[in-house]
Amino acid sequence: MLRQRVITALILFVALLFAVFLLPPIAWLLLVGLLLVIATVEWGGLIGLHGTGAVFYCAVTAGLFFAACMAGGLAGSSLTASPQALIGLFVIGAAFWLVVAPLWLSGKWPLRRGGAGAIAGWLVVVPAGLALVHLRAVNPLLLMAAMALVWVADIAAYFVGRAIGRRKLAPGISPGKSWEGALGAVAFVLVYGFVVALGWPALGLPRAADPSSVLGFAAALMLITAVGIVGDLFESLAKRQAGVKDSGNLLPGHGGVLDRIDSLTSTLPLVSLAWLLSKS
Image (cartoon, rainbow, N blue to C red; front, side, top):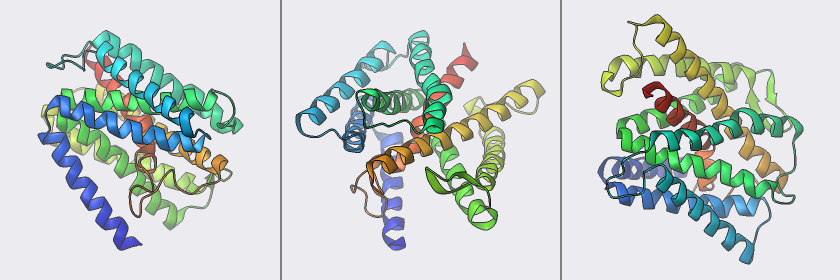
């Protein structure tokens, strides 16, 4: 099983590098749209959508994504972003992850009842897809740095939690997660963030010359790490309510697309929003 996971992870990483650095902008846009449709199929399964309802749900998701890209100026041949429109769209996504999702997790509200689960799915995947297009348009290295931040947090939380984890973070949703693992993720992300800021000045991240900017950058890193954990827990809640271990079986040893991007769906919109606000 571990060998299969490693092989799949290596293939996915090489494919990601190729897509991020070599695909033309429109091809990247279409690839992100395809990934969002796959993720939507998986989310639809988690909330009990099948048949015609699932097809309609995917079609609406694709329409919302491309409409958001057009509104943000990211769907034309030149991919010239419209900052104000993008800020508005990312604020909607940020509000979901900062306010609604924590309340949802606290109350363990059902996702398989009425249209709440469908709306939640759009808020999970559409802003994330928009952020994938936006961050790559800004700088492919910025997108990779943001994704690597999530990977650092996940790996640190896993190993620190296994080593010293005692207090459960959310035992009714994801029993394997601990408060010690979460704090370990924050610590490693802080180190990673400042190494990237110092090592890649072309990204325009805060450096030691401005203490206030450094403190703000540290706070942003901690917030993004916390929101990544919320994103992970939110998908765990959906899977637990659906009675399944994985969102799908497309990726051998890894489950579905949603299983691989759960933390990215919550963090990338915040990274895009923070970037836009810092440049406005």
